[in-house]
Length: 460
Image 1: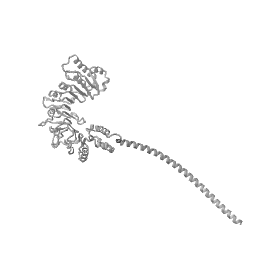
Image 2: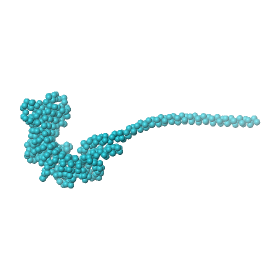
Image 3: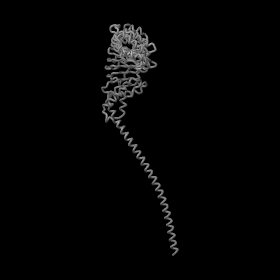
Image 4: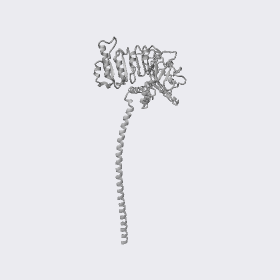
């Protein structure tokens, strides 16, 4: 009996010991789970904080996106006509840069790529598509692309006034796709590597359709001085303004005067290898070709092939006196009976004095540039202004592109002219200077006060 009870006690002790071990293992497991729970709790709190931070960032980005969308879709708030006005202002910059060597980026294509709303406004603003800029390819590889672009523009130009720009041209020819744009009001041709093998001068093909409304033609040669004949202008019966750069004209019979032309500009391109000094023009040809000119700018050397050349209607004349090699022969052989103003370009006014002596009888305005206080220009200026007989009607004097002038000399000349008129020593019809424009650097010159007593001074 006792053995049985002892065995029972031992068995119970063993179970108790086993349960105690199980309890210890449970406590250890609970401790591990508790530590794990605490770690997980900390991780949850960390991720909750990160979530809050990301939500804050997301909200900020959402607000920024809404603002951007508001800007992009601002046509919903700004009327289309306002955007049209903005686009046209941008187009004005493109228009001013169309004579650059590289074509400007199209405003119509730029704004049309922003959003559907802007594209709709651009496509209905016909003037944005009015600059028809065509670049000839020397290899001929991009002709189809250029034609496609022009067709794209022509589909949208509507009733807007077309302006045609042809770049890298080798001949005076107009692409077939542009021959239908006979309502253009400006044609600009930039020649490069002109083809002069067939003829010594360039001309438009006889098949060129008449551009009956074209008032403005501008032709320039990039690298070579080229020659043109009298049939150059046959497709342009209404031409009013003609500009030729690095181009000389030659007289061939018969001559058909271009009666409508009012403004002619001929000169160089101011490039390092081909400046204005390489170009020469026969003023007799100018008078014969264009008898009704009112504005003439010859920024080059002048020649005269016959005496007594009279340009009856020229009122405004722009020259570069230092480029004229035979001033004496020119002033004896040519006359401008209705000349109202003279503009002289260049770094000096060499040769200008005999020109104003010969042609300045009716000149009321004189524009000068390149006046330096310490070279021969000062003496030439004194000779021009000091003798009232050279420019008896002169009332306005403008100094342009001039860093500094001898204001004492100018003041002496102005005072001398004023005293002659005031004291009755001037002949009938002789006037005194009343208006002068000076470079701003002269505003502290001590001679300014004396000058302002006799003339109205303005600043450039």
